[in-house]
Image (tube, rainbow over all chains, first blue to last red; front, side, top):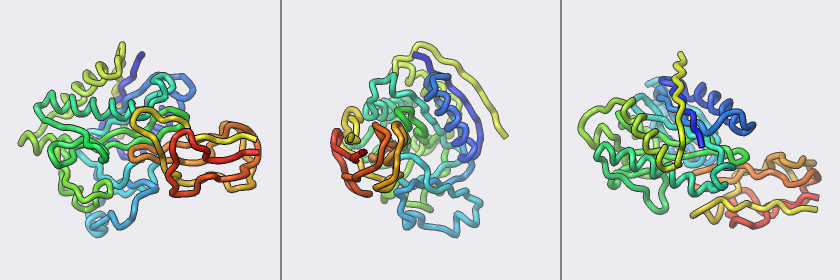
Length: 220
Length: 76
């Protein structure tokens, strides 16, 4: 099984979403293999069709700080924040070749994040009944995907060097929880490139991938 | 006539919630066309119609929790 890894660098949520849709179409039509898209967004709040607007706590902050707000995203989960220092991993995978097992795919995604964090000496876990990956009682990575004819879209946001104060303007995932980052846990910033490299290495093992193609696409 | 079933979703997922219907009862629908959006806590996905016909009945309504392998709709 092959996977392509695409690095879009710093890119708006909207542009990355369009890129994902394009890749998802190609995967559906069998033109490309499973694809992992890395990127980093400017300050952005995204919500799903299930989001209660009361989960936005500070509308004025959003307006005054030029934070993008994108509604009605076709992924699971609830409201969340994306921004500089957060590693977005969009996993556009063909579950038709992975046993049509959505539960296993999500577990493998969480495991990949947990093992990546372990490589940086951060102990993390998933929590029964809660989404995402947790370091102690704080959430360090959020997960939410959409699926079209067994091809996935969206994925995870891992807080590497994320400015955590931005999570305070919402109720992340619709819950009263605290967020954390790798930077906070380790008391120092990390190179996003190192985290990407480790995640790909771990993913390779968990999904039993044969080979990797790395494509870097930098967009303005 | 055909029943549209919520497919098995894999380990640990035994139910999903109806997000919204893309068709109303009485409307024509084609085979393979997305009929209803479903959601779990981590994923949203569409369930397509299995035949071309008329949506006769929505067995589950918006917001209802449905177990896998249960009937979502009847197409005639």
